[in-house]
Image (cartoon, rainbow, N blue to C red):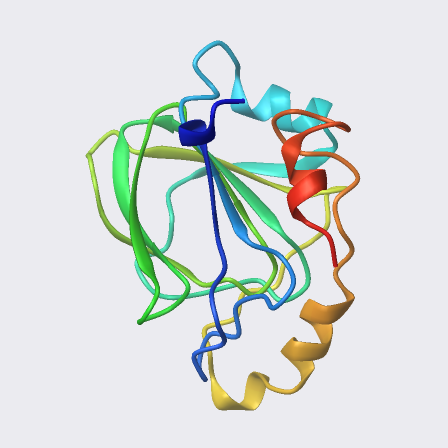
Length: 165
C-alpha cells in the first residue's frame, strides 16, 4: 500500500476525551472505490453495521473500536477532542477509530453518508467526556481487544501491524 494512502495518528488524553494510549487512528484514502463498505466490513468480521452520519458533538466509544466508511459525499471530522485534528474525508475513505478516540462532525456535504461497524459486531456505548465517566471508561478502553481483522484488508491488513499493544 502506498504511504500516502494510509495515515496513522495518536491522540493524547485531553482530560475530557480519553483517546487511546495503545492504538492510532488509522485513515485509508480512496480504498472503497470498487467495494460496498457494508459488505467489505462484514466480510472482515466488522459487523453490527449502520448507515447514517457522524454526530455533531464530541463523543467516543469506550468498549469497542469503530470503522467509518465514507459511502457518499464529504465531511470535515475532528478526531481526538477539542485539541485534536480535523480531517477532511470523502467518498471512498475509511477511518478506523480506536476505542476512546473522540470524533465530531464539523461540516458535511448534503449527501454525506457513512457506513459504520464494529469488530466482531460488538455493541457500543456512547460517551461524551463527562467527569463521572472516569475511571470506568479508562478501564474499558484498556480491555478492548485488538481486532482479528483489518476492516478493509482482512487478516493480513496493515492494521494488524500498526495496532500492537
